[in-house]
Length: 83
Image (cartoon, rainbow, N blue to C red):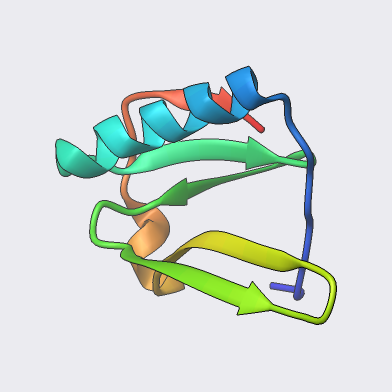
């Protein structure tokens, strides 16, 4: 598998809807299937969740991150979403 780093901007409403679906999947202990820039993958139910804050001279950034082992991503989710 090749390395990949993709970033995409959304309207507040679209971003909030995606976060709600992800939060529902995490709370219910289910995997979450998502597509980003043409690639579809599964966030497994046991993904590690973290929040990162970065501060520079002229801006700040908050990142909500999910990390998992590729071996854990074989679970099949109930839903799919396009990002």
